[in-house]
Every structure is written in structure tokens, then in C-alpha cells.
Amino acid sequence: MTDKLYIKTFGCQMNEYDSDRVADLLQESHGMVLTDNPEEANVLLLNTCSIREKAQEKVFSQLGRWQELKRERADLIIGVGGCVASQEGDQILKRAPYVDLVFGPQTCHRLPQLLERARAARKPQIDVSFPGIEKFDNLPIPGSRGARAFVSVMEGCSKYCTFCVVPYTRGEEFSRTFDDVITEVFELAQSGVREVTLLGQNVNAYTGRRHNGDLVNFAELLDYVAAVDGIERIRYITSHPIDFSEALIDAYARLPALVSHLHLPVQSGSDRILKLMKRQYSVADYESIVYRLRERRPDLSLSSDFIIGFPGETEQDFEATVSLIDRIGFDQSFSFIYSPRPGTPAADLTDGITHAEKQRRLAIVQQRLAASAQRASRAMVGTEQRILVDGYARRNPNQLSGRTENNRVVNFDGPADLLQNFVDVQITEALPNSLRARLGANRASDFAMISEGSARVLTYT
Ligand code: SAH
Ligand code: F3S
Image 1: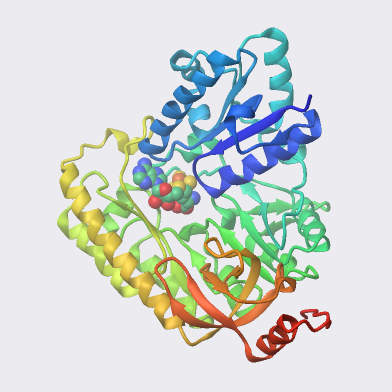
Image 2: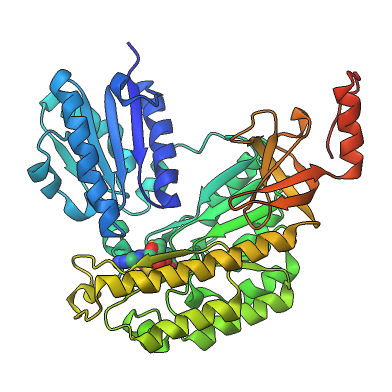
């Protein structure tokens, strides 16, 4: 009988990527097929996140629900992977002894072996070590899923911001070799991928070795990726201001395939707080990067992450963050109340701010960010935007859906042959979470012919 696999993922894009690879891997090794129903699965995996306390709490309440399923089916395998697994290790088994597998973000490629051992020994198996580059060599190349794909270029983080668990859960930065990355991009392009998102905790810290021993930096990598036939759009997440080189800024002048959209976490608008966070840049440094980027790309849309209520954040520090938000005009961004993470330096700092005050500050920041994103959406109405059509509208399966360069979902009427292609549309309306559009004049008349039953076959070039 075919084993069925159910995976639940919490957290960042890195976790989503790992979950997809794990599904591919278990399909190769055990012929397992994915199911979206935990009740019919033989293997339940939880890919976890510990970046904030809330995410971590969700892990144990989810496991509690799965324990019920295991009471009914003793041979059910329950696995916990990702950052919580990495941080808690065998503590997970103390709190949830019915768990069979514990694996870290750097050992998910060893799951087939761990699973075999757990089944044979009927004992829980733990592997949360950091074997480094081995992961890249042992996960299957992603099967293409349409016109968009993620390509992992580096893993881990060596910045040790004082609030963050990532360096402890994912280990230090290490880059995949240049040859591996570029081969993967090439193969994806061959299979129809038009847009790649280069993935890593600090993608712009990338330094990959070539077969001849030379090192390739991130700006150079972008040149090579852009030169791959078929790749028309390039995104990357996440980058860090201190690795934002002049060459990377210049790439925006040179490479039309690089989207006019950048997620560049700033965390705070106060130099004093940035120092306590050990972010290693000042507000002026950050603004200088933005200024130079906008010299190359006046239409650049910029999104960011903010931490509100970091220990010792005064009203003045907070005001500085609000003022930065107003100066930059950020697009769709994320903001979080500071969450002390065990084992990080900031967890030992005294925190004189009440929770109610943090919530008040967060509400102000979120309101400003939402207003500024809404302004950006409204400014798009009437403009022509190039979108990559990647499916049907969520609420209306008769409409097509795609994404703009600045990552907005656009729904519009159009023929199905546009799927997985780029098309130019005219934005007609800005809704809170998406945009509406109509096809440009040429495509609209083609569509009319199709609707009238014309036998003409359309090819979009
Ligand atoms: N590599 C990215 C960040 C990864 S974590 C970078 O360069 O910044 C994603 C976001 O989670 C961070 O940008 C930060 O805003 C938030 N975050 C991380 N640790 C946090 C904590 N302890 N409390 C609240 N937010 C946190
Ligand atoms: Fe975390 Fe700072 Fe690295 S936010 S992921 S330690 S850059």
C-alpha cells in the first residue's frame, strides 16, 4: 500500500521550500504521496518555526491534536522538523513522547533513513546536527511547478542579531556552489520556469565557489542567472543591509530582469536600538542604500520588517521608526512585537515597556504601513503592469490570476492559454488584498475572438 504523507509548515519561505523538498524526497525514497488530510496519512510531519514565541506554541498544540490520531493508529509516524526541533532537540520527546522523528533544518535530507530506523527500532530518532553543505547535495532538484520556482542559494546566518534564533537553529552561513545553482536555474528554465526567487536567510552574503576555485558574489550570481535563456524575472529574499554592495545596487541599473521590488528588513528607525540589536548599520546607512537604489530604479517598491518594543525602546526611539516609515513610503511590510527568544543575548536585557504600550505602538506602525501599501496600490490604478499569470482567481475560478513585479495579486478575465506566461494588463481597481485588471487592447480582442468560438490558436510571445 502506498504511504501517505501530510506536512504542516509554519514559518518562513525557507521552511516552505524545505517542506516541498522533503515531499519530493520521500516520494523518491518511499513512493509516498502527499495528502491534505491528516486522518488518512501514515506519516505526519510538522515543519516548525521558532522565530517568535507564538509560532513555537502552535507546535505543541498541533502535536496534541495529532496525538489523538496516534491513539487510534499505533503505526502512525509523527515527525517534527525545522527550527523548533533544532532548538528543543530531545526536549520535544519529553513534552510529546509519542513523537517518532525529530530533525533539524539541516538534516531534513536524512529523513528517509531516520524513518526506516524509527520503524525498525520502534524507538524515536533524533538528528538535529549541522552537517552543512551535505543537505544541498542530497535533496532532489525541485520538480518544476509551473512558471515560478524557488532556488535555494545559501543557508544559515552568521549575523547574530541579538534578538534572533536563526543562527542557532539553522547554523552559520554557507553557500551552495555556483555551478550547482546555475545548473539548477538552467534546468528550471528548460522546464518552463520564467521567474526564479533566489532564497536564503541572507542571500546577498552569497559567495559560491566555481569548479575552477574562483568565488562568485551575489551581484555576479545575478548577472549569470539573468543570462539564462528563458529567465525573465528574478526575485530574492532575504537580504541584509550590511551586505548590500555597490555592485548589487548597480545590478538594478544593468538587469531589467531584476524586479523593481525589494524586501530589505530595517527592524527599527532608531540608531540606538539598531546598535542594541547589533544590526551593524545606521538609519542613515539604510536610507543611503534606498536613495542609491532609487537613483537606478525610481519606481522601486520597498518592503521591510519591523520589531516593535525591543527592550528599552523609548517613545523617542519609536517615533524615529514611525518617521522612517513616513520618509521611505514602504510597501506591504511586516511588523512584530519583540518576542524574547531563549539563548539569545537580548533575552537577558531588561524590558521596562508594558505589553499594552507595545500593542499601542504596534497598532500605530501597522496602520501607517497599511496606509502606505494602500497608497501604492491606488497609484497603480490606470497603469499598465506586466504580470506572470500563475493560476485562477481564488474567489472566481473563471478569472485568471497573476503577480506584478511588486508582488501584488491581479485578477482579470482572459483565455487559459495565458497561464504560465507574462502578459501586460491595465489595472482597473485596487482592493485591500488584490488588484483587478483588464487585458491590454491587443489581447482583449484576441480574447473576444476565442470567446466567439474562433478556432485560432493563440501563442503569447
Ligand atoms: N534574515 C532576515 C530575517 C529573518 S527573521 C534579516 O536579515 O533580517 C524574519 C523577521 O522576523 C525579522 O526580520 C524580524 O523582523 C522578525 N524577528 C526575528 N526575531 C524576532 C524576535 N525575537 N521577536 C520579534 N520579531 C522577530
Ligand atoms: Fe536573524 Fe539577523 Fe540573521 S534577523 S536571520 S540574525 S540577519
